[in-house]
Every structure is written in C-alpha cells, then in structure tokens.
Image 1 (cartoon, helix red, strand yellow):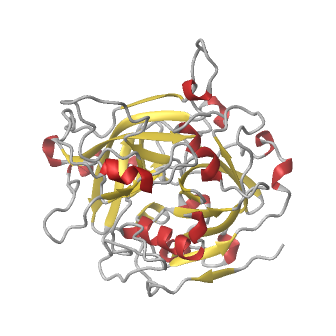
Image 2 (cartoon, helix red, strand yellow):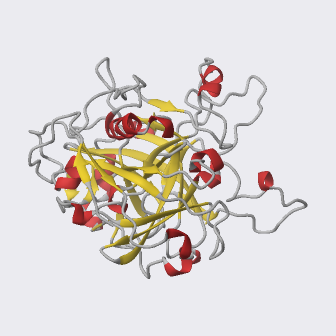
Length: 419
C-alpha cells in the first residue's frame, strides 16, 4: 500500500530551531498530517504477536536534570498577558456530548480544601487498574478497566521500521486519539520513512485476551512540523521536547461507530488546568497516569500511577514531571487530572474550581537510571512553537491553547465529524 503525506500550511513552518532549551530566535510551527499505512490485516494479529520485547521510550541521563533544577522555573506565568488555563469536557459513557455538561461546569464553586501539596517531585503510588477480588457483582460499572473512565485508555501497537512497537494512548474526542509523537514518528527523520505503520488501538486491554472493545485502526496522524524536521525545542535531541504530542484520527468500525462512541473520551486541558501554586512557589497538580508499561504485568495490563505533577521550564523548554516507576510501553499514556466518577455532593463540600476530568499531558520520557523514578511530559499549552492562546478550527470552534489546541484544530478542520 502506498504512503502519502502532506504539510498543512495554516502557519509558517519553523526554520532550523536549535534542539536545545536555550534557543530563543524561533518562529511558530505548523503540523504534519500523514495518511495511516497498513501492511497487514489488523484484525488477524492478537496482542501476543504485536508486543515488542522491550518497548522504547526516550530517556535522559539523570544528571541532565538534577532535582535542584526542578525547584526553579516551575511557577506558571501570571499577569494579564499570560495564557489562561482551560479544558474541554469529555464523555464517559461513549454517547454523551460534552455540551450537555457545560452548564453544570460553569456554575461558580469555591476552591476545595487540600489543593496545596508539599513541594516534592517524586512521590507516587502505582497499582494495576483492576479489582483484586471480584465482589458481589460483575457489572461493568463496578469493575475497573473495562468500565468508564478507565476504558477510554488503551494499548497502541504499531510497526516501527518493520519491528513491533507498543505505546499507550487515550481518546479525547469521539474519533481523536492522543499519544506521544515518538509513538507515531522517529524524531527528525524529515521524510515519510520516519512514520510508524499498522496502528492498532486496543481500548481497555486486560491480559492477552480478545480485546474487550475490539481493534481500532487509524486514518491520519498529526504531529508538529518541528518534531518532523528535528528542530523542536528539546533538552537532548528528541528527548524532553516541547511537542512530543500526536493526535491520531481513528477509523470507524464496521457498524459505522468511532471508538469514542463506544468507550467514551476524556476532556483535555491546557495551560496548567488544575495546577496550582503550592508550597515553595511551585505549580503542582494531582495527576493520574495510565499506561501499559512492559515491566509491569508483561505490558498486557493497564497500570495506574498517582503522583504530584510539577510544571517545569528551562529556557524555551516547557515540560511537566511526575514521580513514576513506569517503563517503555507507557509512552503516550494520559496524564489526567480529576480522574474518576463525579460524586454527588452536598454543601459545604465542593469539587474545586477546576473539576473537569482532563488529559493535561502524555508520557514522553523517563530517566536512564531506574532508581530515578521520574517521568516527563510535553506541556499542553502555548510555547515558542505554538504561541497562540486559542486555535480555532474551520468551523470556528476553539480547540484550546498552544500545541494541543493547534493539533486538535487541524484534525477537526479535516475531520469535523470525528470531533
């Protein structure tokens, strides 16, 4: 099957921006859209035949970012000119449209207690996303993984230059999947040869079994032109970058449905949605990280990691960091704030000022030393490559700020019925 790719020209493509955090003379970037390629029937391979022995993930030497560096440059910008945090709600049940929840979300509520957290970059807890012992019922609503909101996350398998690869990914619209750009493309290849092929998304995969919600294929992948060209702002080449983010447009199944119509989709946020300045002046958030790391349960079970995420900048580089022991295979998995089912509450209790369950990052890199237990994500929001506080699609719908807003706006311009 032949491959085709093309550059979107909504913005001027960036010149050769030095792949270093200190680069300052930069212009805004564009996006690269690539038609998905399949070299084999995606319905005929079970997960066991697709899992690589050791899924790759970009890694940093711990000496590149010593802990002391995280104590500086970690407060979100403020003032009248600073980008404002925002989020678009999702659909947990696969059918409900976000607009139905907007009226409730707009109601003013006071801040909840407990938003401030100790200034620490590494605390976390990790466990398999499943019930350890089945209770009195086997209803999906009472068992994890295959139930909402877990099931909007899944394993993403593909071929990278002919070899099997695996990542994690999640739905952020009825037909849009978000993952890491390195799960889609080999940084800086500059040609279509850098694209991975044969994408297969397995929502809520648990064990080496028949996928509970089927196998879903891709139509088009969107990444930053600077990631494509290898000119993105990065700490090291292709590692800890501004725009290690990809949006994948998914194909409909035989029944004409998109995956989000079946498993639901998360909202997504930008500019530090749900982050707050805490002790020491750092901007922190309570984050749930989901993924399929190969070192846990052989990569066939969804794992949940909860920790304190911190905003981090150095020069033009914007990232978030999170204490986590996950490994290769977790790449592209969502970093979610307010994860869970919204409770029914009675005053004076509140859900806080930014209560929408939202993906605010995707797993991008970890350290070469397993003892460091720290992972990073490209910041969802404005940066030197995508400076605008609002990106609007061709239907005049605001899709958000910065990199995530631009990529989603491009995908929704071309595939509005998937949004």
